[in-house]
Image 1 (cartoon, rainbow, N blue to C red):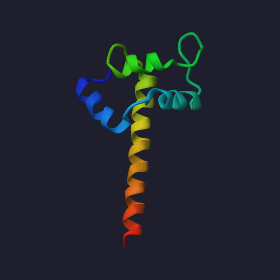
Image 2: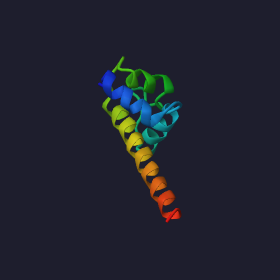
Image 3: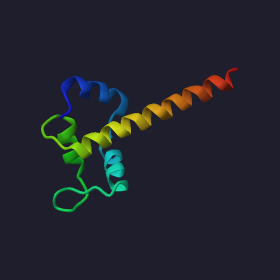
Length: 84
């Protein structure tokens, strides 16, 4: 379960409208909910806000965070190289 402290840090990295991007990650992995359907944005938010627990969704949230951090680092590197 994502704690309040973790949620605060994640929110800084993910920003708003993160749920569709988490769903994309889950779909790429072929992960579905217990009914065999695509996860909803509401279920993603429920997990993110600590109301429920789901390991697959939590891992996808952290994967999105890592992807965003990698892109930001690459952008900073590119900007630094262009100023050299």
